[in-house]
Length: 123
Image 1 (tube, rainbow, N blue to C red):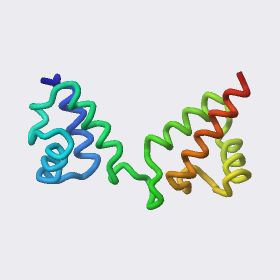
Image 2: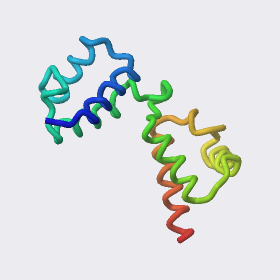
Image 3: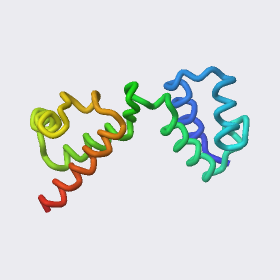
Image 4: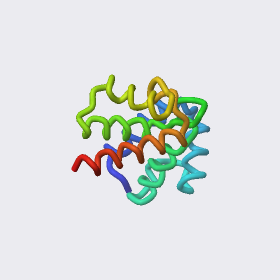
């Protein structure tokens, strides 16, 4: 069984995603084979969180950009010490995009790889 803090996280995500009770229980059953979060163990909790993150509900735009991708890009930009203006210029120059929110899932993946390359050359 998982602890109360993890149950609280599940219910916060459920609310953020706007799931009805039936949608939430169907998602739980499809993801982990249970109808109640109280039945989850540590492994199934992780699977549920991963499935939540992969779901269409966590897409930021119609092109499939995920919250996870955006946060990772922003993390890499911070590690590089770039200002938001510098990063937006980089995006425009190499990807013809005004900001990360206008990127598709595939473009965001390429941006991530580019930033990782820039970071590896900096070190």
